[in-house]
Amino acid sequence: MVQAELIAVLAAVTDGDPRVLTIDAGTALPSGPLQEGHRSLQTGLRAWVERQTHHAPGYVEQLYTFAGQLPGAARSISISYLGLSRQAVTEYPGAEWHSWYEYFPWEDARANRAAPVLAEILPRLARWAGDDPARQSRVAGLFGTGGRGWNEELVLQRYELLWEAALVPEARRLRAGEGETVPGKEMTHDHRRILATAIARLRAKIKYRPVVFELLAHEFTMLELQQTMEALAGQTLHKPNFRRFIEQQELVEETGKSTSGLAGRPAKLLRFRAAVLEERGVSGTKLPLVK
Image (cartoon, rainbow, N blue to C red; front, side, top):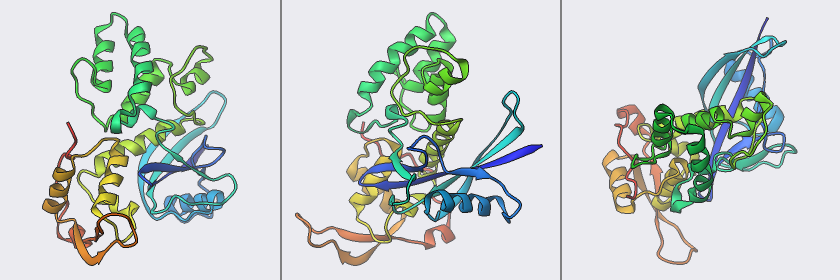
């Protein structure tokens, strides 16, 4: 008998911090088995999320399907979904929003935040790689050493390399090994791997589809838009180039209103041009990163 498990990665951005909705003190993603009463996979997923967190998912898309079997257990299929929310608020017991950089602290390159954890990771990976050229090349390519650039989309590959090197608790758990692991909050089963997949998907998608607006209020400032993009990408964006990028894509329009009651100069309030999706797909453009 094959069991189908539905797993949700629900993301939101609050105060410049990308967050994921979790259960079990932040160690698991909302999940549950597909049941006979569920009309569809997505219906079942939404039912489990609402039951476990009392949070109603908004935008949802299928993310990843994984088939596996543990010794002595029934064969299972894990079907994960990525959902986006405009608010990271919940008061339901057992449901918590956590920064996804608690789980992947090496992924936040804004203002050099990842430097301390990378200072721990890289020597351990160097010891693991030893004199093996193939391993050395993988480390350099994924972590941007030896003059290689950092590719923010390779979230899953970096986690899997750390798993292979037995530097994350999940790998130690399965191998019954001992030793130090790198910083980063542990998750049950393969939930951190699924979260890594979701982050990578979202980082890639914000470059060619305007899904970022699913995370913003209906009216927002250019600064709020930039900070949300930076939070997701884990990268600092060049302000003038970012504004030019948004204008060229014709993603937003002015509302005719401005912020008020705040210190400093009022900022124009913008809204997403919904017609963009109807007119054309947004062309793939590299984010204007600060060099």
